[in-house]
Image 1 (cartoon, one colour):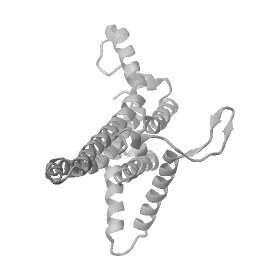
Image 2 (tube, one colour):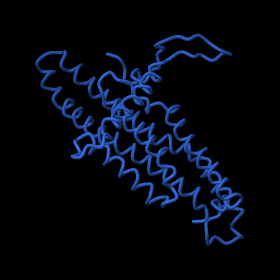
Image 3 (cartoon, rainbow, N blue to C red):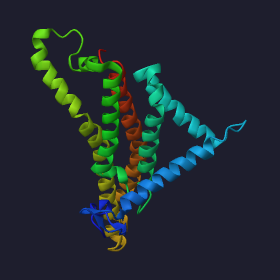
Length: 248
């Protein structure tokens, strides 16, 4: 049986050659990201048909829509509504990618730091540029919290700047680490089940405990897939609020 790390290996699906030393091959990660976009779009289109009596799909879409809209309103206020398409798109991508990763033999794109960091970088660059455009130099008030004496500015400002610049790292590592650790743990216990069951009757009896743990971890992974998508979204909303109201 393959080791618990091999499920995260990148493999080339279609080789497109190299341009300037850059390999343009379509990998399994790229395929699953495209699948994530397709499934997310299909889910939203089916659920947004606007039937007079909402069905299950429409109810699910409306529930997700309202959850993200509420999080954005509570964090960034009404001015944050212009960012809803970005926030909702990120939420749906992370959520669907996480759920796809729970399918046996599927690939979890959010278990790769390069993917989660790219998503976090989009948020960071967008928030920073908008903050500067909206507030000008007033955006830098973000690095000196209200009420802090000016004498402490030489100490507080560098700390706040470092904290701000580290946001893409913390934003991306949280999602990456949870998905990576969860899938590794699930793979390990599933390996125990297969290994014990292969040694005979005694092994089958002994495999009951790791099988139960596998079921429990799978349920926990399903819960974490939703929670981590929401946490990623809430943090995005918080950063947007900083761009809109840097002095708060």
